[in-house]
Length: 247
Length: 317
Image 1: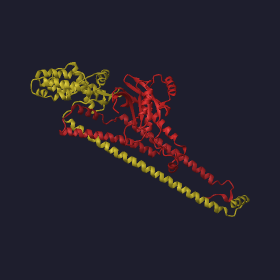
Image 2: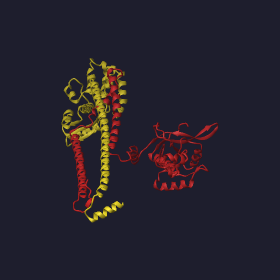
Image 3: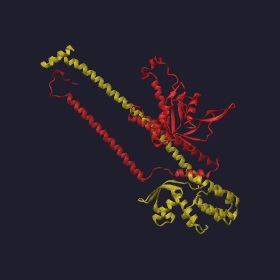
Image 4: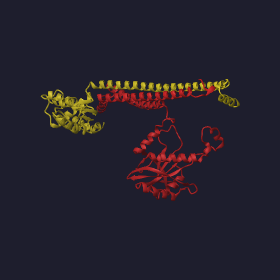
């Protein structure tokens, strides 16, 4: 969320620039925007009318470039490197960062091999340096690097610009989340009721057991009076009986 | 009471609030005669004692640190109030101040406190008396009446300002806002008080029910917030609200965090812990059963003991 705040001013600045310039000067604006180290959101610039007009003109490659930065990855760029203008090192870096964000979209646990392949790095050390310096310190991703299992566990990844169809899937995910939490609420309520009924049953059971014990005690004491009146066989018993009668 | 314009920010520690309310409760319960406790005497107490009047006001001093524009009130102690002279016991105050200085060299006397529903005129005398220790003391007022409808704390902090009223410059109390600042130890105790368990310790079922109720309300809040987001996105899709890209980006990053916990390692650990808990409760049940059985056997041996001669007194159940 802080990424968004950091980017807000930059986005405004570039949008203003884009709306004032036209044609070829727009190309410079686009290149400046895509090389800026803290800007990761391009859909606002994409929606500026002057930029959309670029479509079909000789500078449409810059529009495609902007679109690539908004939605594409490094491997997509490599496959279409011929049509797009060559990249400065800043832009290469930015596109790789955006690639990490796209990968984080689908999986929470990114294996090192996939990352190395997508980002064109050969060894793990370089990959980890890239992830730590360029992604985590900038703040676009937060996560844990698990070297033993060779994977990167993503806890937070900043959002990329939305493709047109993504809004529908986001709404779908949200509604799933909603229904899951509703079900969870219902099952928690049932559990609470169950706990209460169980404790009630337990108390009743205890009460019944106590009552039965009381009854048996009473029956016992009655019986004791009866057994005392029986003729006894030992003198000890007689003595005890007489004492009882006196009581 | 106008609101303060001095620009000072006040930070209040919960310890002070607990101290003041404790002082008030102690004095109130000590001033009532000792026969007035226990529920059985409720009916008689109403007739035998005088009905408790407005609870006596308690007074004390607050101490803390002032750094620049921030005034942080850490602690407080009690003072004796002399109703005849309408002032606080000065020598006691100074003695206490010395003692506290030894333990907390950083703390200064920042002001004083009392309990009542509203600030009164006589308070100004006490306030002026304290002005020679601290040129701008604060007055912390705790309202001891319990108002269930009120959501925030019944604590107000007043400062004194020189206002010109009717041509005469006078000191009046002005209200200031404050924030609550907690140290870790204070947080633990406040948490403990907030989650008072049923006093008998509760059977396992009531504790479980209380815990589940807490979880239930937390999830309910989360649910309502997700519902709002869902509604908003739906409206955006239908076109009622213009696209707001930065918000959509934040929502997409949020949704990517779901499912929050899912990985092989988590499943393994979770199952292991679940099995451990089940095993332990099974074992506990076993132990319980075997000890009950043992007791039962002992009782039977005692009851049906054939080796002693007791004649007709043997009880046959």
